Length: 381
Image (cartoon, rainbow, N blue to C red; front, side, top):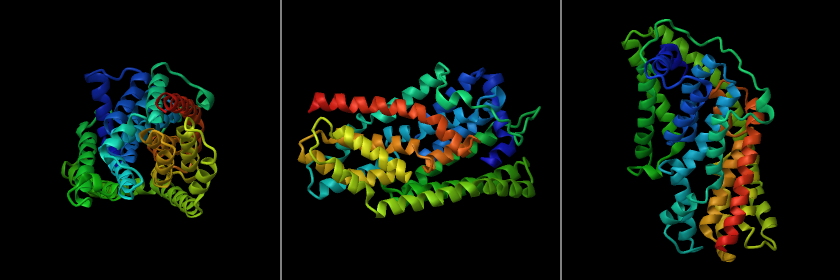
């Protein structure tokens, strides 16, 4: 992203969107553009946040939009849309966890059909996307977001003659293409079984090599400038990498202590069938917030939630939907979540500021989801 910024491609894209097609004319349309990017690029939550941030940052600079608001848009579209359109690593993980329950004889069902049914009960993801859109459209600032200010970014290039926008678009499009290629390779021919983390690593590395030949070959920058810029970008990532390292360590400790299993055992005692989805949602939210990982929460809670639902003759798809929703909700609120940290980085926003300003919107979406789980449980059980 630092290389793309240095190439002038972002300036070219801004010039194209503002002066040629005239799609972006205000702060609202700027944030809607990042929102649209977050919705349409659903391959992986981290990539979604990075690209939405890269597209939105120059418009934040243009219209003096607080970076916290852009971080909120990036974070609120990344994981929710990835969990709703499951043609990605999220779908592969969930399908694997559900298939394991079927293989172990916990229930009899078609794994794919059950996963698709559960997506219709992913109420937090739906409410988060709706709340974010309304907040952008009506310029709704609540809580700490009212106090957030735009911070000038001194390293943005302001070119009187912008470079071609393809210096930005080609690396991003190639990045999206490479994700599917490496998911296919790491999955031995099956995209749904590919390794999401490995695919993202090889994708970024391949795109980095592409920018070397593309920018230097086009004489957009010299080899020396490319090398220095790449090192500047790597230097910016170092604190983020350290935060993530410690966050993963906390998550591992919490997992080894079997915190999730303990909480579930407490909650399952004398539990009403009408409240199972609500309790599973709250438990998943708590575990995800504590560990900073939605995927880890899915891995802990689905083997617990599915047998509980079967034993109580509750709606299994609704229960799985509650796990997914809770995992994303807690992940959104957690200051040690990778998507929280990456969204902050992509938007040039402090992590703690992003957490504080996003929290009220996440809580509103969480309350909506909670009510939906109770209402649907009463109707279907």
